[in-house]
Length: 162
Image 1 (cartoon, rainbow, N blue to C red):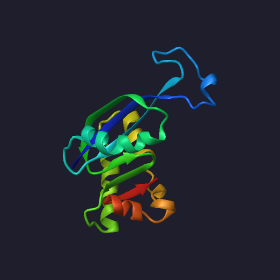
Image 2: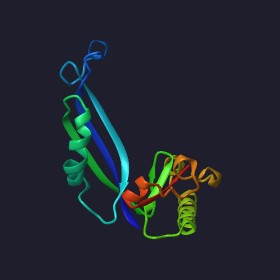
Image 3: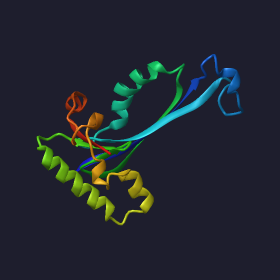
Image 4: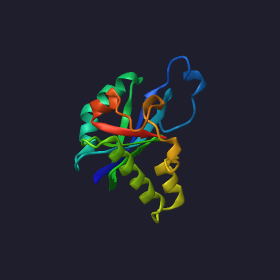
């Protein structure tokens, strides 16, 4: 089982010049700025300081495409320990040399375990996002599951989209 963290990021940025006049509203921010943010789950091979890594590696690169980002808030919480990490209609795990069949069997066991757990229904739905329907499983670009595309290989993962 791997540690899975929930990441919540919030920052302010300047409105693009062409939209600034249309988007002025009262807020705690100076005129011409708005709040933006994102959240996602990430799985690590071992417990680690995810905040430090995001501040060092992710934020400097990501923030380059933003207009004067400021007021960064980064919250990382350990969500659970599991074998599969959920994304948007997608799940992934680390590639440890499993055959395609072993990956599919592992994912099937994960789906069954989540589906028949005592978790609230809304949490199950957000974790599975349709994965309980095995006919939906596919790899990238609708290839056979699991995905082992160059991007997945570079990240050291296998992925099942659904």
